[in-house]
Length: 591
Ligand SMILES: Nc1ncnc2c1ncn2[C@@H]1O[C@H](COP(=O)(O)OP(=O)(O)OP(=O)(O)O)[C@@H](O)[C@H]1O
Image 1 (cartoon, rainbow, N blue to C red):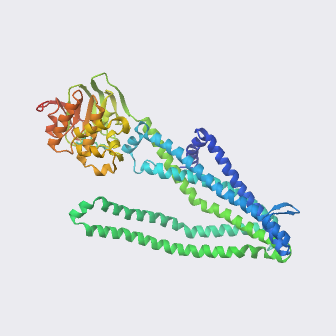
Image 2: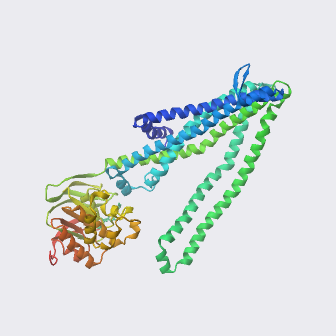
Image 3: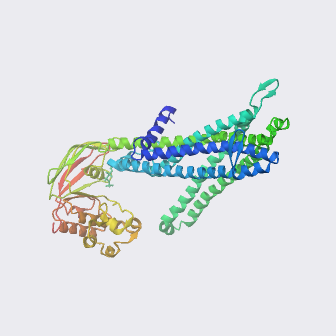
């Protein structure tokens, strides 16, 4: 963990924009001011209620029924001023308590909405999400699981920041107010010849600190145990999900017994940890119940000598009991907040690291590459060096010019760097340097196409809006791509990533290319899941439907090479940068 200074700086850096510079800053400040005012008023009402208590019990002591009724339902004039009735005080208290929480939740969700939008925009800008995924450092907190940072950490950050800061303010004011009340009620005491003024204040503070500290000590292992419980429950659930996702594989291997052993083992951990939670909860409950029972009489016992000596009336005694409870409540808040403070610190650390990783990734979006538009009819790379994130060189100082109408197939042994070259040409690979010039109307088809959730129409038109193409255009593209059976299901909302086979997914990607009508089509083993006949058929369709498009394909099969004019062989020896070697290919029949 970093020092306190940098941590506070990070906390401020995350908090500042919403309240200081965002377009919502005025409504946010207004809402925060109202919540603070409400919380302080709640403390004020509690203080008035403490004096009300004194009047009320004094009225009981002297059997003054009129004062009793006034104090319950209307108001009463007292020597120290007008005392509102219980109904009014309770009414105001209830309204404040309800609306302070409600407005707090409102501010929390608005703040979270704003931060989530900001983080999402930053994360998706300049392909920062992709860059971070390439360089993710498992040891560094903050850059792993971006989904968790954006959903959970932002939620917990806004929640914890508000509850800690507002809680701190209310509890300081409350502690101070009730310590003063207790001080005025409590006379001095002589202990072993020492004169101690306001002795009840010291007793209350000591009682609260010892009690909450003991509770904290006994209860602390529970936090760890419940954290572990979440983990073992998640492990058990994950094992069940693995079975669900691999049912066919398990059935074919007859792996039921093995699975059942694993599942029982994992559930065994759930039960074992739960038993520890039970034991610890029992201990904690013994302590808190005992403490709470003692708390009922403890302040009365402490104040009793002054009551019996006549220095305090019944009202004063009851006010003392209430003030004692309030001091204890505020002190407990400070002790309990240790845990939330540690949690808050961890959240801020994770969010700040994530934020810095995004800024860094955006700054290095294209690495040392200069990606520009190519002059019409060419694709050019000049002096391109292509590295892995760890610095390993895949290609060094490469030059390449592709001309329109001259289709190329890129081949090479697996793992040489063909897909990485494809990413460089697409302008998304950030590691390396050189000039990359690509014509604007280029279309990139990866090996594993992205299939979003939603209707099939959304899947096929992605990333364009659903209304970008007519039903006839979509039907034609699907039919051309070999998916005529899906034409009727365009409006069906299904789990398409799971429903479509690997080959069908690649056909959907080709349908997208047919709709986009690009001048250049770059394909990274984009038909590898199809059988050779279907693959050849699709290449024929592409050439027929898009006769002016130039195909640049990465492929292993010779049958695909036959659809291209030239072969570019990516050759790389272990530990050395690769080279691109041009070779001729036999044209396919009808090419
Ligand atoms: N993000 C990454 N981090 C580290 N290494 C990577 C990363 N991406 C790719 N590599 C490595 O770079 C090398 C080249 O990968 P690439 O996918 O470009 O190969 P390829 O020639 O397309 O292989 P194939 O024919 O099997 O698809 C491989 O050794 C791969 O493990």
